[in-house]
Length: 248
Image (cartoon, rainbow, N blue to C red; front, side):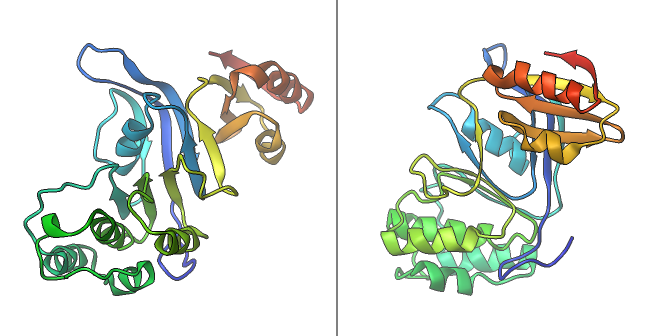
């Protein structure tokens, strides 16, 4: 890993053909392939699997099928931070700091935490509890996985969080549009997976309209494409000299 910015290191999370269902219920995710190597925002309506995908990326939840690769240090904030934590904010962060050998003071200062550090977490306001949750996540040195992290934050703290995420590798759900310049992955419209061989122009493939991710495998690659652009991407891949192994 290489040093990058004030808060940590760059890493990569790879989800390869990941599917998830709960028991015998309907599939929440199906054959999703995604590489997260920068700031990436998940979009899509409620029920499209954003929170499930984030839990899988963070290692909180196992996929039903597929493969997940992630670096050692991943910081995670769930959509709803537990409201019954009896531990104080200072004790909680000290505990997480011992686990990850880091400190959260700078993050709390930037976010403007003004609550009591010795009161139980359950007594903090929603905004201050969210700031503590974010502080423990930023102790991670490789990747951040954040589910609606702006929930409960005041405008100043929200702006600071945007700044803190710049240059980080992070997978974030953001229905309010705070990260307009980040890479966006839409779960609402499904996708088409194209397996290619004899790939020589990865940069050209990644630049094609509708391509959501390109995962190289030697001289082959798996390309995930928006359904309405699959024919265009197939034609361009053939023009670039690739061979199409499968489309699904």
